[in-house]
Length: 304
Image (cartoon, rainbow, N blue to C red):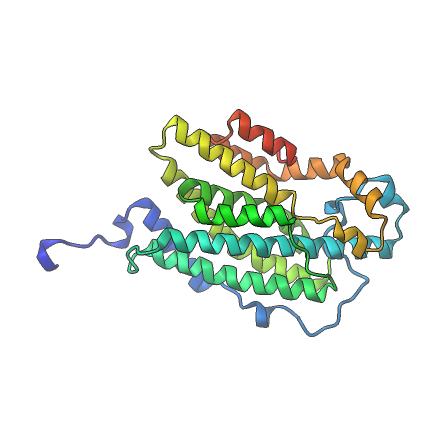
């Protein structure tokens, strides 16, 4: 009790710091080391899919009906690797935004320590995704060059609610997909393990992102909300539309032009995306981040 001030007990901390403390406690109890948890040694069994077939961009199309089971499995493996590669790209953006946000903040605080814990987990996830894509026999899928450069701008300029809401969108979309994949016995076992690790640890990251988004928007005015709603929606559009690169069809030995055309028109896949994002859209609506311009981008990305 120096200088007459009594530090509050953990249950007396402000709510957002209490959230960070609970997340730190969760990470101490439930965390994984992908280097040892994932079976990296067993050769790839090509009798398995890389993702649930229903999540394939071609599932339900005439082209899908023409493919052999071996071709379908190869396609889902390439698509899973593309999603993983996009995940790496955005996780690198995420890490830089989080580090910038806590730069020069009190290192004894729970928020600061949780932020570093999240970055450490994201580093492990990125390595895990990279090794997983390699084991799936995929090349290095990357977003379009324009998207990469826009990502450089976003990670440098985005802050506060814009950064955390964009982080939430990327994580939520991937989370719903991977919850299906990790339970699907048609998916190759090591990918299911990767999905399980990511789902468990990302649940903490999403909770922190929601809390930070609410916190930063608590006193935001109309203009600020509209600007950030547009920024988040634009970022979300480029993230989601970069998940499956058209090069996956070439890698799977398919007619790229036809595959791209049928994937773009695939109403089944669009409905899967919309259904998976219902909870996310409810949160964004509650945060008043679903403005008319923002909705236009979410609709173009088939998120609503």
